[in-house]
Length: 464
Image 1 (cartoon, rainbow, N blue to C red):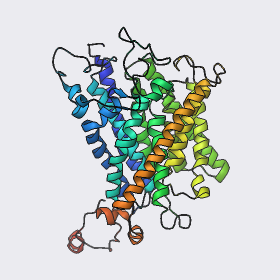
Image 2 (image 1 turned 45 degrees about the vertical axis):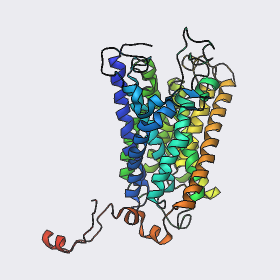
Image 3 (image 1 turned 60 degrees about the vertical axis):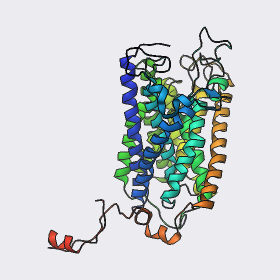
Image 4 (image 1 turned 30 degrees about the horizontal axis):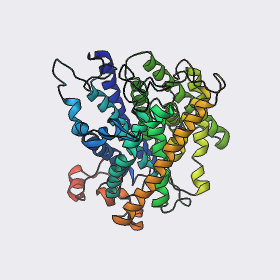
């Protein structure tokens, strides 16, 4: 263990954590603009409530489950991590102790602060699938249960590398990680699959949960019959821009150091996103005859999703390839909901599940040996071994998330109820659940004075 705090690494990871936090408000705007105007506040609230719920759970027990000493490589736990007690002991003293400063020269509390932002946005991602119709109380219950039972253990599988190999390593280092074999989560340490920043734990996980949740909650009233267009495309573009900006912290920050690997992840993140944006809008042009702003924003997000697991394992040309495949693939995938008949309101399945699968599997195709922990991809060595590991990791996370989410959704449906009533959905979930509307659409009579208007205005809170 390195007892010296590395100021540069610590500053970079803390800045990256702040960037990742900004992604959740960015997601709120992205989703808010895509839904109808009677649902925008509910979308914003679902994302912001995720910040509240998951941040508290993370301190109380989430970090302990995700990064505590492993139990069967399935989940972590240490009573000393409850309330982050072990991470704050002697934190401000001159003498650092084991567990306070990690191998990157980061205070472990800094790492915990970085990782909580991943947990927050993963929960928030699911909300877009159930726009217009999920009870807010049901969402709060779901977010709490899902983070606890699904996200925290899966984060352990993917992100908990385990103990550093050294003189006290009786089992020998893991084949791909340089960490003590079987000391961390089973995907990263035992299987040896590659996921740099969360293609499995974040995007496949959230996408599979979204699919399960929409199958249980059912379709919106009028789905497939009424036009349900985005009500505010400029807001969508603002949200996607904030996501793109924050994603540099998401991916490059996952290097946990201000080094060459962070620079690689940074460049790959940008170029894959750019390639996906172009691929999506050209696919739209060929299919529909138009380049759309919604397509540009969605294509950018698809590229961000797909490059997330691969940004530390491919070179920039490989990143471009991943972006192109994601842009075309996700653009085509969003049409599946109409063909199959599930109502994924804001295309969480088509973008995050499909994009996460593309990025995770493409590692096995285009990974560069110089960055991929010595693995050989199909195009860089001719081996299918890495692709097989990636497929197992993706399939395991997708199956676990889908099955457990289905059970949780059915449980909530049978107890407090999952969705609002039909007449409330027609009125609008913002008014029903939050007693607010996003826009004041009252027509102002010509020549009316401000005092006259305010004197007759209805006594309700209105966000303008």
